Image (cartoon, rainbow, N blue to C red; front, side, top):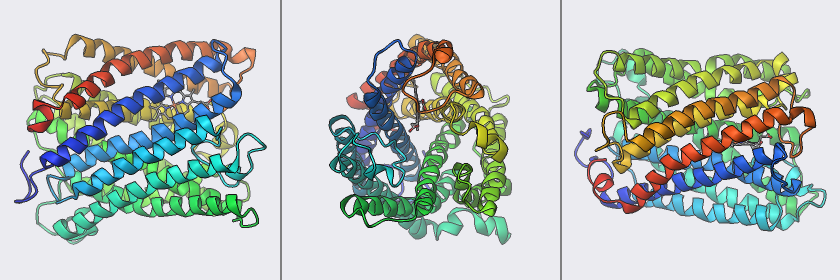
Length: 491
Ligand code: HEM
């Protein structure tokens, strides 16, 4: 891949090895978290007897694990491609992975040894009010683990910010503001630089807010008289959680901008519409989180109105420029439909389609009825499972070299796995949505007999999703562990 300037030729061999470790960890954790998801679905269908306490511990680990690993995978995509444009510090990349792994050990111990089951949202004052389900030590271990992971990501984004300021002349320049607002005729920044600037701008305040509320919750565990307004705490938590999860998608989509052009022989064009879309989304991602608080009637009405209006607009700019850009770049390009390119397309479809039920849920009158139902896992599994995961796997195929040497249309196991993943995945998320439409509550370990048919359909489909996902991800894991030609050369 051509570098922008000398000294920015992409990852060094040391950084490539760390990135291979990121990919191996992402592949392994995705499979393990899918196993937990299947176990929860089997338990809700009454095909598996799972102690409710264990269900909620598993739900906590599945939620935090999936969000965390989406961020690790997304960070690998961003770092790998961005390192061709700016000088990044591989030691910080490594520090983030080490902190992630250490935090993961703490979180697993808190849940499965200490019994912590306060969900990945750890909503204040729940960590300290378990009703006897867990001790405060378990809650503290969970929060400390999460804090360590957050600090790792904060270091990573501070390094990205430093590199963008030093090598691209600042964050505004990296977003292409001179071209957008000042009529500059200099070449616009590459899409990877624009997306990385956006993610950095939104994630730094989000991570700081998250760390602050975690520390407040930790102090509250030790000194129960020390508290904070619960509504304020919820605002901070969702400002952190929503922004951080959203950013995983904006990091991962860099793979589309970078990999598709290599398969079509056409560059990804950055025009003023593209720049305007990313700038608009930068502002809106920061403003949209109140749509998580629509059931909190004490929230000021203006904040909820912002949440609703911005939810309608938030995803569209980047989604549209990326979706239309993808169609334009592929149309009559003679593209070869390999596993990588097919997965990219599925990812684009999952992202675009999954946003529709999300927008419905962000409508205040709908939200008041639907928000605590299965509709919500329905919409976010749609764009995470069928949007983010296929894009991540496509990147991993690219990086590990699995995309090379496969016969026309991809290797047979890939073709089968991709087909099963798409159709079983669609059925799986639609069943979640249908259950939500019928009013089945979310986050319930035990379901009523009337809900079991849908649960069982979803459980069977989830087994297929797991099998197909495991075929692809375990191949990636093997490729990343073997290293070899693919990732040590031009990945
Ligand atoms: C085989 C694939 C998967 C299965 C079977 C699965 C299953 C489940 C189930 C049963 C729940 C609990 C639903 C409820 O009753 O509220 C859940 C929640 C969740 N899942 Fe998944 N899931 C899968 C993949 C994913 C992926 C790929 C992501 C994100 C990258 C993800 C993120 C989450 C999150 C954040 C929660 C919310 C946990 C909470 O409510 O605290 N899942 N999943």
